Length: 276
Image: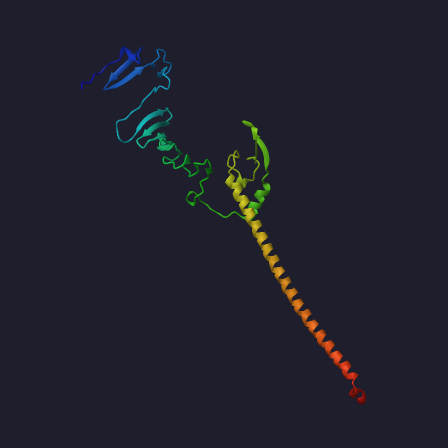
């Protein structure tokens, strides 16, 4: 195919049945337009303006015939930022921070799952941190040991102090005044369960504190119950011993009574009188 190289020209361009005037330069298959380009409009106010009155019209279509690599639309700024909207052959769509080689968000078209920081979401919404929303709508925190560092046991004393410092309140959100809620004020909670910006709270942090305190209370109750059972056992043993002693005393009293009767009988017999 013969290549046609144009210089800087003043040309009339027919686009979308709308005739507009542009200053254009073409060479090696590239087209450069000086000014705004209008498709379906004679008054473009931005570099590229596409207008259609058709309901549900597709205004821009990007297609690749390649079997790998997908197709992309790039956005750049002079400060170095470069973002890409990319559709891939895996039936997905991603937003990529191209400057830092990082996939920010991924939409899995086949399942409808959305990944933030991951391009393989297994749930309706999944974070790169491992947290996700289940199909049933339950938010699930990332809690695997492989995600954590500096793991230490929470002391009973610290948990008790934190629990004592929590002040439950009722409130309404300013953007949802009709609904009443129960919770805490992020700025007022103890440092152990506070976030860095003190604007939000993690419910799991508070649950961990409650769990530790309840576990300690349960252990205390179990110890008290064990002590009470041991004391009850000692009381029962003492009661059994006392009953046995009472039975022995009763037997001795009966034996003594029999002996007394015998003595009285002997004292009243003729032989006893003669001896006297």
